[in-house]
Length: 85
Image (cartoon, rainbow, N blue to C red; front, top):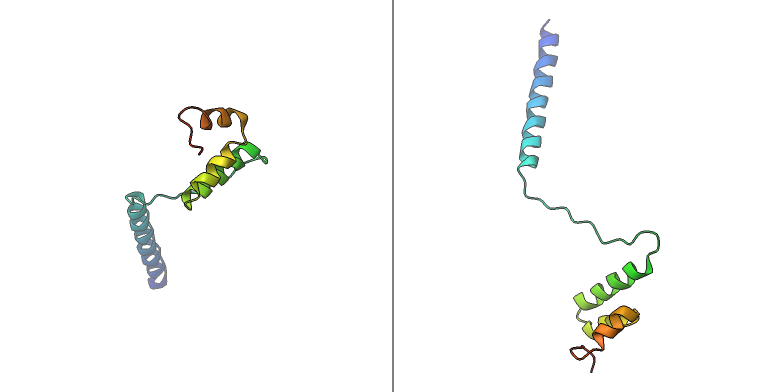
């Protein structure tokens, strides 16, 4: 009988610990960010991610040149308010 009570006490204490951990996790402001991933070999998506990466590492001119490979972007980037030299 004592062994059975010990087992129940152990289960109850672990249940309380688990409940406390879940409550703490639910109240957390932790934000999980996933890396940007392009699906199905989407070349436009990959080009945009590459341009973003270039810009983030300080290579804005290279990022703009990469974006200019898209005709719809090229017309905007080469316009009167364009970024080209």
